[in-house]
Length: 168
Image (cartoon, rainbow, N blue to C red; front, side):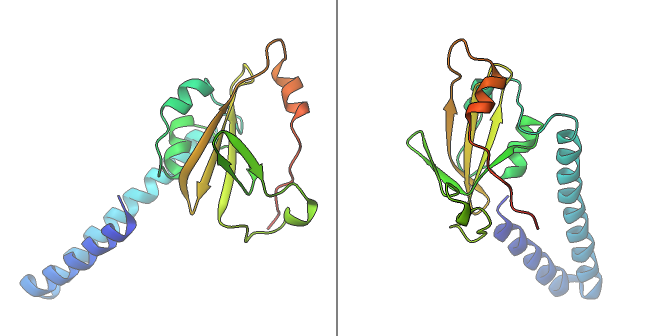
């Protein structure tokens, strides 16, 4: 659900509860709102608990994973699909199957204001990977990168440039 719509419904519940039932209606609206927030928090905790059971950035099949992706998915929905946290590649964008990395220079590695784009990668045991681009928390683009024939996943990860993740 869109968060703006959710908070609009909360405001309407408070207004309707107060209008029709007085203070008891406001208390009921407050109770329902807290229950809704607890459900959302429980969902996020369940997804994160499931993600701790798998290695970071791994998925069973990159091809099957990329077929389930939809634009405007949140990171929580993507982690729910993969049951694994992604490997952060950096701040960049994926357009037309190409990854343009904004962290190509060391000066940009610690820049947190890089246009709000986050790039994450999930790799399967065969070496195929899916690179996802999130803009303002929503999935905007993704790219399936197939492993080269005859090359193991360890050799592929050695070929890829290492990016340092900023520390907070």
